[in-house]
Length: 179
Image (cartoon, rainbow, N blue to C red; front, side):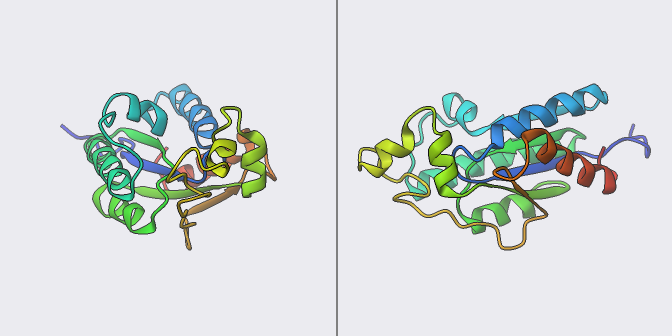
């Protein structure tokens, strides 16, 4: 039986370039939401690609399939009262719009940092390899990233700490009655 006072499920979809801070912010949010006793799951691009979508590459078609699978998981979780924190580059607006249309209480969060900043932060050396042409289809270098035109939340991780960015998202969730 459902209780009308239950917190609804939701999907916080964090999009942005590699190195913008999506995973870091998702980890902070996850901790804060669990401290409140909420049911929450974190779906992260790197982790999902190691399990649910390891058969996919990085072509536009494979990226769309990756997000399609994640959307299905987020849909199941969110409609059953679980908060989903999704951290995916998800570079195409039409794909993010599909996620919005198919999940419960969706918030598109643009985790934004300029390209030069994410290149500086790149501990794995991926941008350097992509710039050298060693990694094809690399978002922001040889593949496009369509920045959200009207995200529900826009945080600039080059101008605020991960904790401050997480708090902006938490405040929005609270104002909507999701937490």
